[in-house]
Image (cartoon, rainbow, N blue to C red; front, side, top):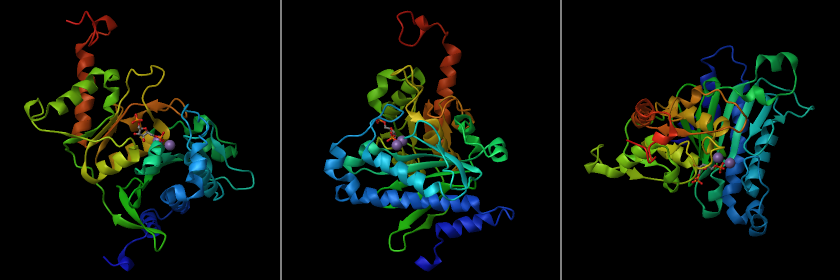
Length: 364
Ligand code: AHG
Ligand code: MN
Ligand code: MN
């Protein structure tokens, strides 16, 4: 298709807004600023060690530790700064929260405050940066509570603790062989590819749908000894292949970069699991609810897939803290539903007493 006939991200947003004659255009402008931040991050990522921010002397210096207790890469910090600077001035946000900041970012006093909240993971999969595997940025847009708009007060953590069903828009940018932006504004999922000549995201995937069935699953199996029985059962059945209860062979993938896994699943189906496990009892999962699980969950559901904690739809969970972690299973609907079923079945069969749990001496 000639370039002149392709929609840009701007055109897509304008055409979408026409469905809502009273819309102010703030959301569109916000999404365009987010997309600009993503373009800036993607460009830095693409320079690799040739860029100042990835020069060996910078990366060798090591990073600080973020609120998650994880070592920050220089690019984590830089990407976070880019998101903040490119979105704090526009008057569309009341505040922002990110993986890299312990508390919400307030809009500086010299800029107007707006009606939306933005949460983001500025660089997902950043442990893969040095090995040149696809990484990305994940974002979620919520409405600021009415009390914030009425009072004009600063945002608090509580203002962000809204279930994923409240998201107005969400998506991710993936910095891979091609840079893409995948977006939902609650009307399906669309994908844009960055045209480097124009510096524009152009609509290349107008209707992304996750196939309901799949024979591909993704899980970090080095954690298998910590899995709960329903997850172990599901994976064992996949591994048993043709001769097992599923009656067909499965394929396994693990990139360790959730945006890359989510993107593969959007393109050809599959199921991703980072379930709650017993590795660290103080953490109820690996991935973060507000800026990883919810935006990816919204995209999956809007593409006809499913996103779950393993027990319930992830978008229905009321967050309890800004950096809350959660078990996450998403992708092809029928597989996610099967995993949920497995979580509910043993609970009915097994008594609560841990002495009688799956691997106990007293199991009958
Ligand atoms: P981040 O780089 O933002 O900290 O997130 C990394 C996440 C996610 O992208 C990936 O699926 C998972 O961590 C990888 O976990 P393992 O290290 O257990 O493979
Ligand atoms: Mn992440
Ligand atoms: Mn990150």
